[in-house]
Length: 195
Length: 95
Image (cartoon, rainbow over all chains, first blue to last red; front, side):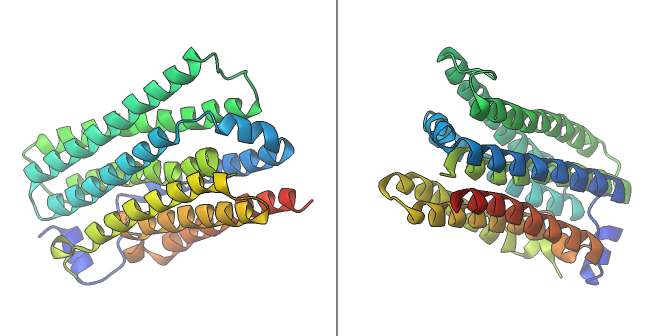
């Protein structure tokens, strides 16, 4: 049993990963909270334009992507549990499944952008699409960084070494990936569903 | 507390899945309603969204067993972000 599992077994507070990643996560989430408010404000300024533009979005793809990220997050949860039990191999496989979900999310996002660009809708079309491209685009950058992190987590798990250091690194990657999920959970209804 | 043998996270994932489909369905159903009903549905969709965020935070990010300051910071974010969106939204609808 690793130290972390022992700590959790004693029901003592446990911070996944390390303080640094949580400062980054909370900071990033604050920036996105500002984005959400800005979007809500501009939506109020031009409700008709925002509604008409939103109606052209493919909500089915948005829904699928939300379900993909939720599923990938669950794989990550199981992967973290596996590494704490000492099953590095199983953990690595679960991280790979999470990675595939993230990859599918990215593929769908590209299809969606392609659909819009093919229809002549770009960043400069109107305020709604400016925010749509900037906010979903910035989130997409987070997904790509998350996917790279998942690769590093899998490489770490592939090494034979065990110990608290390894578990901590896995937790850092997991916490970041969950944040990517959290941001999309708000972006999806805000951009695609709010009328 | 044995995390490895708990199906809790599976139940959370299933709930998140169901709530996501529910909010999508609510979003689609908005086409058939008018007046303040639309705003009520939008509010419900955003509240559901932030409830899902909290589920991910507490169970997937393990904040329910994290040190209190971290857990409170996350909860504060949920409340502030949700309130900011809804206040701006309602302020516009009512003026």
